[in-house]
Length: 104
Image (cartoon, rainbow, N blue to C red; front, side):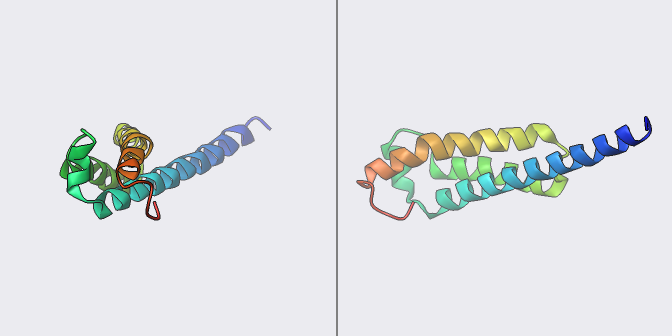
């Protein structure tokens, strides 16, 4: 009985790591796609980083997360944080700038 606990623990940890990796890749991908389809002038109008900076930050973290498959956890967490800041702060500003029109 005692020997089955570590095996179960490893399986649960692997599933949790997989879920965190998938959520991280999805959130970062959505943020990067949204950033790339926006006009660059809107970023300056709302007073945030330029479009290229946001795309570079999110893109580099996305590539590192994808290539390392989440093993470099610090880059995954930086990528999630940057993507969430973009989606929760910059995206609404861009949407307000365009009077709320558009799909996103």
